[in-house]
Picture 1: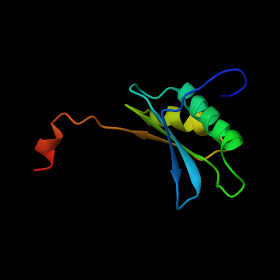
Picture 2: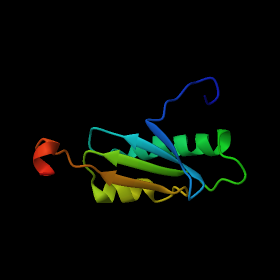
Picture 3: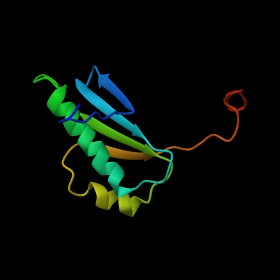
Picture 4: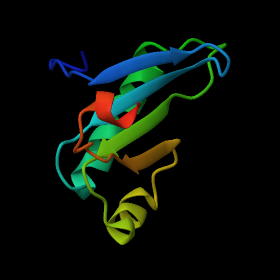
Length: 100
């Protein structure tokens, strides 16, 4: 809850060795600049509302279907928080066929 509104993070983890929260946002479409702003907002919310003094800075990970590297670079240029963007690849085969 931030202000009078509720927001929902896709996945939230705590990394025991790094002593920090990890916010993961999943998108089923190509990266858009507003996704970086949304993730930045979630990372800030976790830092202000959940993180303790002994915890390190929250990490944000955005996983998208596709990424234009230049658009991603411009979107993260002035964000000072540790945020990364990754692309996933959908498996076209059934996992049992891949791991034989």
